[in-house]
Length: 116
Image 1: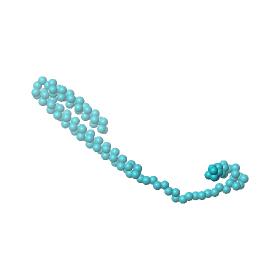
Image 2: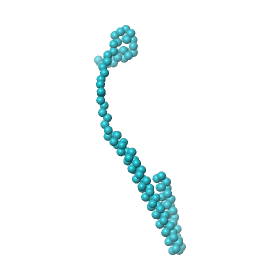
Image 3: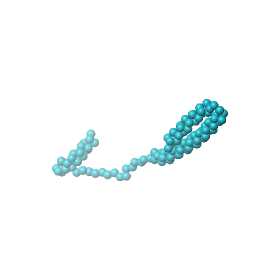
Image 4: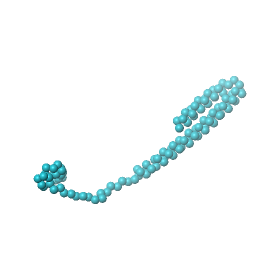
């Protein structure tokens, strides 16, 4: 939407420039006045479009602020980590069958590293 308004404003700028040239080269005072009147009309329309563009830009900024505010609140939140409970367990790896399991082997390796 803003891009369309900007294009329209540029088009009015181009038309105003042409009308000024025509007014400057007009052979009679009547034609010169006619071109200047046309120029004032175009400038009025361009001013209206500019005000509309600024209003749209203000709306977009307000929407952006509305989106950013909750994000700022979320960034200010703190995360607290707690351990609600701890579990201790013991593996019985003494039997001949359990010695062959990979879990017992892993547990023995961990205990060995902790002792080192």
